Image (cartoon, rainbow, N blue to C red; front, side, top):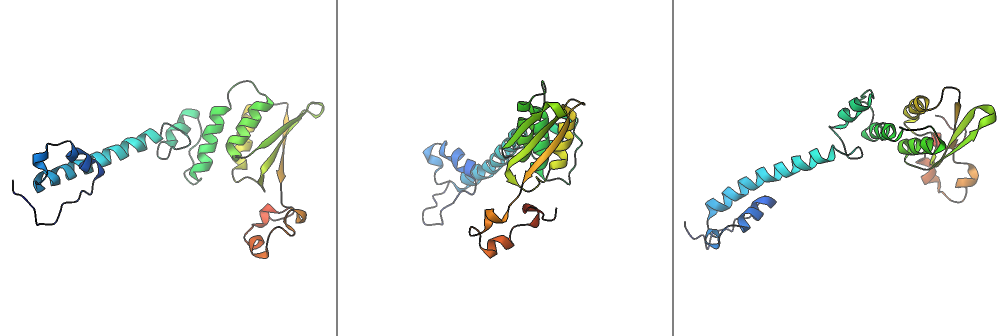
Amino acid sequence: MSNLSGSAPFSFSSVKGAELFSYLPAYYETSRVIRADMNTKGHEMDHFYQALEETFQQFFVRTATWGLPRWEAELGIETNLNKPLEQRRAVVESKLRGGGKFSGKLVKNVSEAYDGGKVAVTFQPQQWNFTIKFIDTIGIPPNLDDLKAVIEEIKPAHLSVEYQFSYLLIRDIHGVKTLKEMDNLPLSKFAGGAV
């Protein structure tokens, strides 16, 4: 082993490689061969730990990416790769929450899983009806059709459902938003705007 004093110092490009090297005896400090060997092995360990972390993320609906089709298949949900991951995750999470006896709490949990915001559920027993009102979401939620399908699946057949949405009104924006800010808001967020 040659002493490399005077030559350019070796820097590790692998986090795990530097960690591996730190466990070796001090007499390897000056060996470029051992440093290069630990750096190479470290890169392999870096890739291994990254793959391990990515695999671990597939065990949870909110972080699943390439494992999401398995969740969907397990729950009998048709996989649609054209939908954004967030919408697909919401469908899976809602289906997981949707088990049990039908109640206002169940409808609320399922609806909030789709929307990500607060909803209010009210029942009108005389009309055999219940209403889901979106409180935090302005306009129509992007995955409303998926929510409707799940609600149809969990509700009793004799009940009908009505959806209520919140929209921006002139009184909500007058004196609050600038014209530039209003230019960035889609019409679907306003009452009477295009859908």
